[in-house]
Image 1 (cartoon, helix red, strand yellow):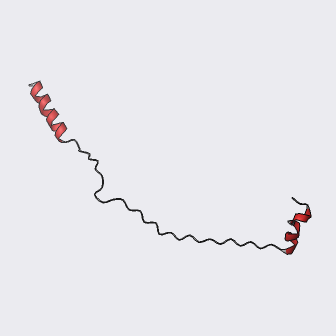
Image 2 (image 1 turned 180 degrees about the horizontal axis):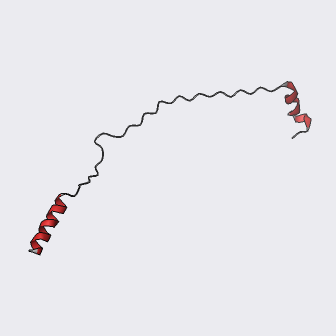
Image 3 (image 1 turned 120 degrees about the vertical axis):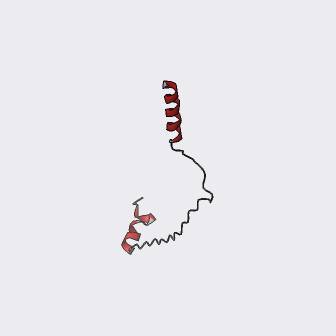
Length: 60
């Protein structure tokens, strides 16, 4: 009797266990990057600073 109860309990427990499936997606993964990058570099040097960086100034 105990064996029959044990077997029945085993089948009930295994029948109620959740099933987990890992499958790849049907469509490919698409990453859309619509990015517009703009940059501007502006350098303005005063005439006094140009004099400091002259080769004849001896700074470097």
